[in-house]
Image 1: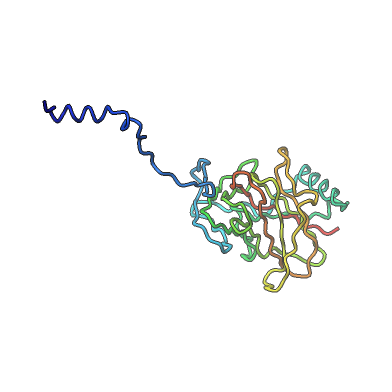
Image 2: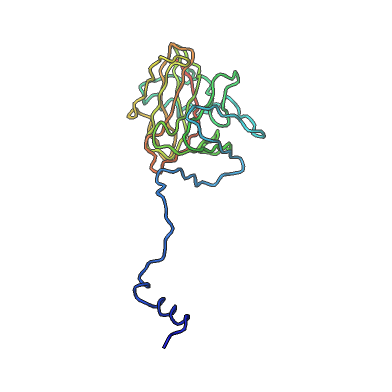
Length: 247
């Protein structure tokens, strides 16, 4: 007796050999090294394309330039003098000159020479809204090594008698390096500030990367800041407050 076609199909579908064939699964590609910018972007955040060459930030339309000189308050002065003393520099408060920022809200000084620049291999995002942790905005990007992500403070004024205290809000990386060299000097050898130097580590109560830059014979220097070992590959940087002083 010949079975109808429908009955034959039912027998084939119920056979054990066919039942053991697993369902097809979509193929996936590992993305361990891909950037994952998961933070919610606020309305005052702008995304920029990637470039391996340092690019000067520009204020978008509608964002007002922050005050260039940060008012000095007693707690700020006491904090700075305390950190200078940790480096062995006991100076009076009168030695501190007015500080200035190079950061997303203040991407360049009034004269237009000094500027805040970003070099990232992946897309990066810029937040111009100030917060307690990042009082002059922030940049977030993906980078596990110096070639992936660099922040450059270009053409920072310097002099043979003037020291510079850098205080840079940052989060996401455990250690940082700060490198500086004479501006507009292609043959200049970068000087790397040792990671172990007091002040380059952060605390939750005071999440700023600090370092001290010695006087320079050059009229301007370039400073580069890089996070060394971000666990997730992403980190935020809020620019730097720079306080000149002459002991």
